Length: 404
Ligand code: SF4
Image 1 (tube, rainbow, N blue to C red):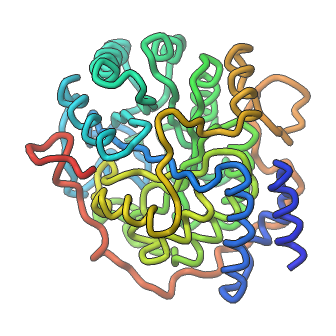
Image 2 (cartoon, rainbow, N blue to C red):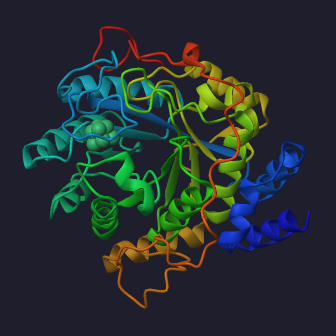
C-alpha cells in the first residue's frame, strides 16, 4: 500500500503524517490489518527497539469525585461498585509501589480522584514520593492529581516528581459532551503548567466513547502539538453505573488501527496501551506490543488487569523485553527537546504543526482543514463484554496483595 510505505518512511525519519493520512489508517480494512501493524512496528522498532516500558498504577484516593467525566467510574453520581477510600498513607502507597517495581515496573503512577489538589494534597503526595524514593531512588514517579493551580507543578517537581499525567481524552469539539464540570482548555492548561515546570508531560486519550475518526485524529494531533512525551491510549471500559455503560464500540481490530494511527503521529514518543487493554484487545494484545512501547503492569485504578506475570509472559513470548531502570525511554533527540523545553519553561512541541507563530496557546482544534467528520463505522459486532470487566478488589485500599 502506498499509504503504509509513506507512513513508514515518514515514521522512520521522525516525521508526522498529514491528517488525511492519519484518517486513512483508521479507514483500513481487516484484510489490511497485519500490514498496518507491520508498518507501525517498523516505526516502533526504529525508535524504541524491542523494549517495553512497564508502569504501575497506585490509586491514592478512589471514588467520590465531584467532577462528572462520563467515562469514569469515580465520577459524581457513579453507581459503579468500585473501591472508595480517601488518601492512602505514604507507607501504604509506598508498599503498593514497591510491589509494582519488584514486578518490573520502571515508573510508578500516583493517581488521586478529584478536580485538582489542594496545597495540603501536594504535601501528602510529597511525603508519599519521599517514601517511595527512599526505598528505590531510581524509580520514575508520575503524578496525576487533576487540574493544577499555579505553582503546584513546581512544588511537585521540587519534591522529586518526574512526570505529570493529565489526559486530553478526546477532541476539543467533543469534550463538552463528555464532561461538563471542566473544559478542554482547562486540561490543556494543566498539561502546559506541568511541562512548563519541567515535568515530563504524560497525556493521552480514551477511544470508544462514541467519537468519530476525526475526533480521534484531532486529539492525537493536539497531543503531538502539546509535546506530550508519553501518550496513554485508553480503550473505554464501559462500567455499569456510568453514563457510557452501553458504549461497547470497539473491536480488537479497531483498537490496533487506533494504536497504529497514534504511533504514526507520534513516531518517537512513548505510546502506552493503557486501560481497557485486556477488555478490548483480548487475545490480540501481543500485536499491540508491535505498535506501542509501554503498558501498565497488573491492575488499573478501579478495574483489574490480567495477572502481572501474564503481562511479563506476554512480553517475553512476543519477543520483546522489559525496559530496565537504567535505559532511556525516549530517543535522545526527543529527550533533548523535552529537557530544553523544561529549561525554557515552555510546552516544547517537538514537531509542532500548530502554526500559532509562537507561544503555547491551546492548539489542536479544528483549524487544520480536515475533512468532514464521519461517524465511527465499525466495531459494534462483538457486543458487550461485561464478563471481562472486573472491579478491582485487591491492592491499594484493600488488605489483599497488589497484582504485580
Ligand atoms: S476522570 Fe478524574 S476528574 Fe474526572 S470524574 Fe474521574 S476522577 Fe474525577
